[in-house]
Image 1 (cartoon, rainbow, N blue to C red):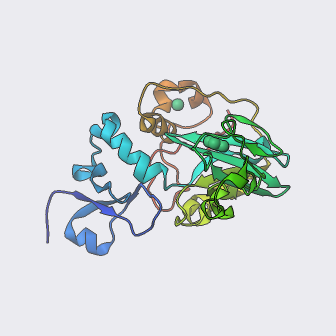
Image 2 (cartoon, helix red, strand yellow):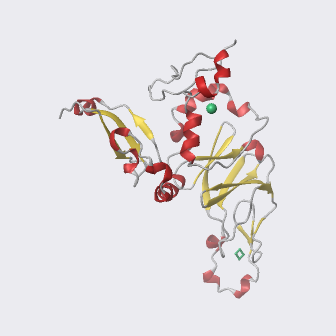
Image 3 (cartoon, helix red, strand yellow):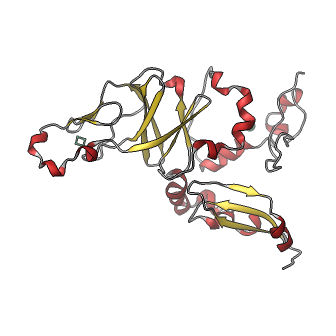
Length: 276
Ligand code: FES
Ligand SMILES: [Fe+2]
């Protein structure tokens, strides 16, 4: 089939995790006239719209945000915290995303686990923010757990029929943890690909920078009155540098493309800063 109009396809992916990726067409697709292939989360293949132009609805629709919560945030690897934020055994960090909350806790000097932040009894959250715990404790009826998520105490357990409270049903529900360069990642999907597979090929480019040996000096968080993609996209492109951050032009050329990207996918990376 031939066509003069460039076309893009939104296709479901076979992987169980999420990959919002623009891919150059392979040879067969080029012959078909496809200019770009877009892989989208399962159940969201309409996100790319016609010809790869992302519909404005994706930024303002409440329904679309609900679908992201289901198909994206519950399935993708996410940075939860830095390892140095939970340096001691028992230190925890509560990671919240949309309507989900995850406890990330150091359970041994070199072991970090994560659990859904929900009491198996009535679903009350167990932690908020960060802190240190000898046990995880529910403030509603007083059930508690060892820091590895296994049941430690059910108040008046003898009053329950034993078959109603199996040890397994009392443990906190685990969440997958991955670690790279000092970052602690979580993934709520037990069938997701490994973190290593998810990070490839970016990991290979970033490992030489020894990000694990770096420490932040300050950071700022804020809540913006806009869809999360608006912010993310601003931080992913360097096209605005010449206008918004033109003081940086003293240190870098006005490039918006990194030649370090062999796949030619990212046209918006700023090059490394050069001496003035
Ligand atoms: S809700 Fe947690 S102990 Fe009852
Ligand atoms: Fe910026």
